Length: 297
Image: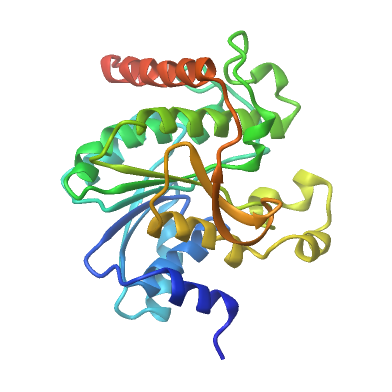
């Protein structure tokens, strides 16, 4: 008998034979479920991860489950801009149909990257926004789509020009993480606002038990998390909905009930002022220009 997840996939997805999906965070808690769902749709998957051994192990598992699977692995360290550039060099000549930005770090030791911002800001925002910019030609060739995974923690951040990356709040992991996700969300929303050559879908998975949200981070036991919140394979459907559903740049996809439970649905992004959106977008663009011009990274 088909599960509710199987039924949802049957009703809300279609065949992706011949389509190429590039995904950061493909070996993570949510990413693994999304990859499996995409392989069920016959997509070709290019996984980006900093650890080749992890990708190879996962790829071997997938090929046992899906003998016809098309999978490639490319190393990328989102805390190192030149690692991003190296990955782009391997991708830029491909026709990319979907770029899924799923990578993220939460409660990690906060240290400064080469750009001068903390590593949470670098990994969750700067490097992934830069990746979009650099892969734009590969996405334009297919009228492709960027699916960016944001978070309800978006609401914990608000532009602070005296503490852009929330380094002064390093003890508050949710704020540091949420601020980075807010930057990624609003910068991409502004960047894609008037584009018709590449599309954007912003998504959030609600709350679920993954390595990113384990009991060490939120004070809840794993068993309590499992009882209260959807399992990861169901939360991953929000990302899948972003792949198959076109939405406006001021909307996002997330669970229907209280943004935590239920099927994926489209709603308006939480309010951000036009001034904040513009400042975040301009900062993102200026950082990318600095990276492109500088040889120091």
